[in-house]
Amino acid sequence: MVKLYGTSKSRSARCLWALEELGVKYEHEPVAVADAKSAAHLQRNPIGHVPVLEDNGLFICESMAINLYLAEKYGKNSLWPASVEDHGRVYQWSFYAMTELEPHLLAILRHKLFLPAEQRSDQAVKDASEALKAPLAVLDGVLGRHENLLGSAFTIADLNVASVLSFGTYVKFDFSATPKLQAWLQKSWSREANGKVRGLK
Ligand SMILES: N[C@@H](CCC(=O)N[C@@H](CS)C(=O)NCC(=O)O)C(=O)O
Image (cartoon, rainbow, N blue to C red; front, side):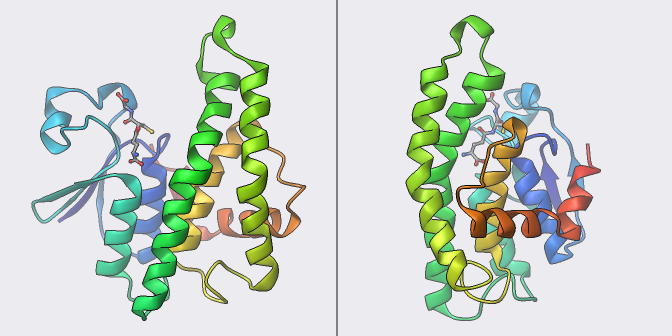
């Protein structure tokens, strides 16, 4: 049995998108972010976060680890490329998204949405937006050379990077300075499998 714990209104959306894209039969328990530290959930994941994947008694947490595991295990289509060299490139872009993009996007979300009004800082938003310019330009350059990050096929690397950047939609982040990236994001986000996730709890 494959089961994903975590509401689609959290980083769990990334893993739900991967499950839908891979066509894996799965159950979904939409554990709320506020319940991530409940006794029941801590048994699944001692870190106390969603998402968590359960696969035949094995529990895995960390959204990127879950997606790389799912793609390697169930990727019968092009989502998991064939060569070890391409696996290296999948890891490269997935870790790039988590280390170079996600922290800055989260800073913007915190200071525009999550923090109480009196703790929000326009300067923090400006700094994070500035810090994003270089990594977004790198992606724009790569996507100017081919349709997706590794080449022509949409792989788990694309899903991972596009899902991290989807944080930008909550604050209407302006990607127009990087037009190739912007067009690729629109195309990636509008995939049918991602659309299905929006309908989940
Ligand atoms: N690096 C982790 C972060 C997971 C995470 O922080 N999840 C949030 C929801 S998006 C959470 O469960 N927060 C609950 C809490 O901090 O108590 C991942 O990518 O899975």
